[in-house]
Length: 191
Ligand code: ZN
Image (cartoon, rainbow, N blue to C red; front, top):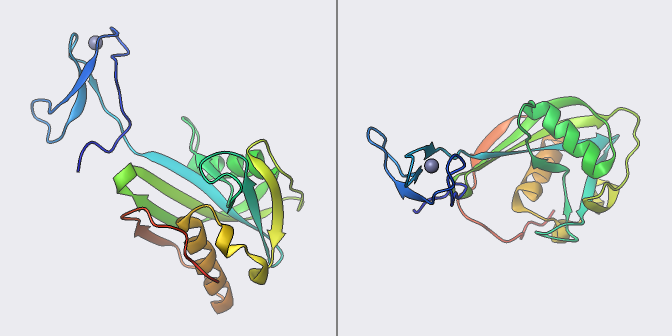
């Protein structure tokens, strides 16, 4: 496998080009400045989001951005510097669904090593049951189990998380799961 992290082209210290080399004493390739030898360590991105419920219904957002424009998803996005994962999940829910997430509980962890990402989904309820489309959403909506648009979900991890949630809810017990997404797969899940 080649370099799967964020790419770096130029040194942020001296503007010289960087190249991939294994530093002395290291065991993997890093971007190193050709002039000042500064090493640029890139690390995985964390995507944080929520599975918000209002009563028995689940809040989904229709994406107004690529990739998967027009597909339904859970509110989620990149964790920001200096915030906690929980606060990031609540922030994304506010930004994408104009909804105030409360009672957040970690529910699902996906490791996606081939693109160096980690997804964290929290279960939550809403402070006042108010929601609406933020700038990155075309619309938002509450879905009963039988109304979930399985054929129009944006990402396999969203479908998987929803299926697990519905099964856990039926069983009356919610389990935190962690699994690895090995390759990109098309959305083929059916309720
Ligand atoms: Zn440099």
